Amino acid sequence: MTSSQRNSRRKIRVAVVDDSTFIRKAITRMLQEEADLTVVGSAGSGEELLTHLEEWAPDVVTLDLDMPGMGGLATLDRLTALGPLPVIILSTHSGKGAPLTIEALHRGATDFIDKQRYSLVDFGALRSVLLEKILQVTGHPRGEVAQEPPPTPITQASALEDDRRLGEYDIILLGASTGGPPVLQTILEVVGKSVPVPIVIVQHMPLGFTQAFAERLNAYLPLVVREAYPGEILQADTVYIARAGEHLRIRRREGRLMAEVGLFPKNLTHMPSVDVLFESAARAVGRRAVAALLTGMGSDGAKGLAALKAAGAYTLCQDEASSIVFGMPRAAMSRNAAREVGDPDRIGRRLSQLVTPAPS
Image (cartoon, rainbow, N blue to C red; front, side, top):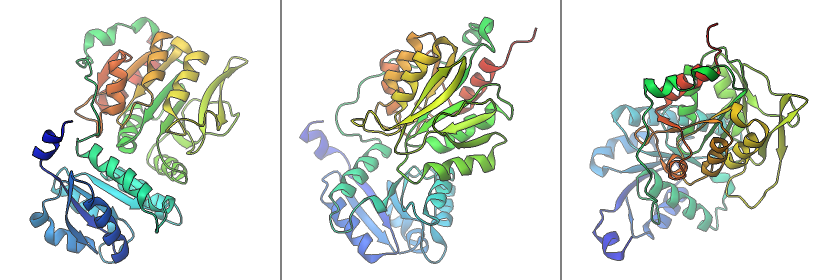
């Protein structure tokens, strides 16, 4: 983007909500240093935000969940009821912080940041990650965005294409980042209560949050949902969540699929990495895998989805209209890695169709 384009673009309007005066002032100060942003207001409670919401007209809200009065979740519910507005949660992974954050994501929060990962003295790292998330969720990513090919709609013709292989798949693989938790829940609800293959998921999350994410899905779905354990044999009717801070690979041993957990490679942006999961499945499962790459910023999973498609697996991407951030699906589509594109509901139905044996 040129400097003239940046100067002519309307600044992104940010509202900051936190019951800590120190946090509010620190976030306001760090965001005001960015030429593309303006902090239109800060509030110490949900009630104060809602009172000024029309006046401030924010494009994005940063929201603390642990606040007096109506609290963060109730504030989020009020915001989502008013219409689409990106909300970034500032949370902690200790105590009740992680379950509250996961609940907020399922209720409509766009993304979150774990405040405990950053020093209260040096806000440089927090500013960088918060700025990146604000720009992404408001549709203003830094740098040039590659042009993706036109999406391929899911049609009845394409659905008939692989009828001869219905029920011949051994595993479902899902990868997601920003906006992923509610999308994954929708897909799993559509897939149903009886799935004849294991489902393995990488959802980008900081340390301390994936267990709460698995527990939340387990409470709301008829399937068993839990974090994957090293060396376990993967079972049907079970959803395995990759644990934050570790990579998850698929291995085949004596004809059965198993989970392999490790810390390498360490030079990747995300741990767990969707690419690491997908590439391992391309080697271990090949054409008997079904995989979908979902909403998220960046390009993790694009290379792995391309490897799966080259190995003969059935590959899908979430469409742009239903993605909070279209970065990961766009990157995969630029590699021609997806056979089909659709929204979460249609992806869920397609996955269910593919792994269900055709009537004899």
